[in-house]
Image (cartoon, rainbow, N blue to C red; front, side):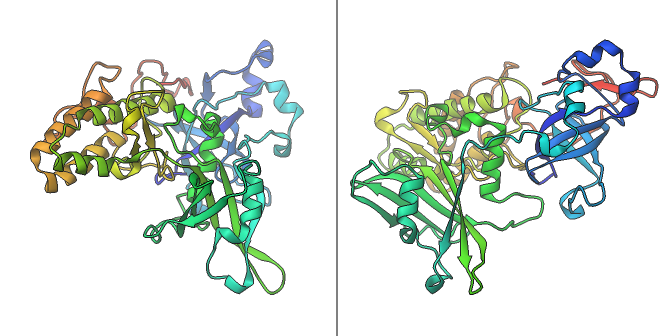
Length: 429
């Protein structure tokens, strides 16, 4: 769930008795597409936030045709959802995970327990790591080395397997970072994060990764987008043992692949001091950002899922392999906030970060760097291109966020509900 109360869900159509009575007999045998939903119609969707099936009622339209307003039916002793975590009307997305159910199939499986939950592909480990009582205030992955070796499939990596701490990167949103080394080479990266929500409306970092894995199963591939994303390969619950034998989950240990190369921030600083051109590097970064956006969101329409913290320190570049392979030698890291709603998009956020670096490197650095990055990102599907980086930055149309205004007229690909016809069509932008 993002800051707006948006929850990403997998849908199953569940027609209300009134809607069923009004439908032709033959339509009962057809699979509903992203098609028509009616106001006051009952639906059932799988809540990734609450990990259960939820019954709801369609109550209206949103400005985006990929959304509908839902009012959750709170059934006593059956649906336990806190009001502070669920506002009366939610915006719930109909995305690539939409799988409308046949009406006869829905009737044959009336209970939510019979519905198949989206798979996380083994991302969340069934093994829980326990902090020893003698050291209950801190966690050291070396205490769980045999379990980690077994769970991560490192048994055949040789006898020289060590875990070393990365100093200087604790505090804030993480409780520690370690590297798992095999034969002296960094194999995996471990990141310890809190298992408690910082805000009721936002998921934990581990919870957000699991939600993303359910929405986009291809992210679980070790060669995700050709190695462009350092997406986790395993998540462990870390619990503290108590005197009565019970345990409570305090942290999540996130296991990620190690990114090749060095941080873009270091490369930019080095090239400035050496008076070298950085345009080729930034063009490739822009090109890979565009590829990431289109793979996740499609080639057109509004950008729903972005990195949300896209800046030079979260980008690794392998200069010897720049422009080679699927990822062009570029890797995006720190994906914990991916998909969460933010005020500005990746494109805008990155250009602003270049502007901040310009306070040290000068305005010419900002102008040339933003130009190269924009050239790499390219024109959007409407033929528009981002503008200059100084003063008034013109963003590509997909990155322009406008306030929500409820539409009152029909638009392409959508039929607005009216008093005489309380139905509408939902299509992808």
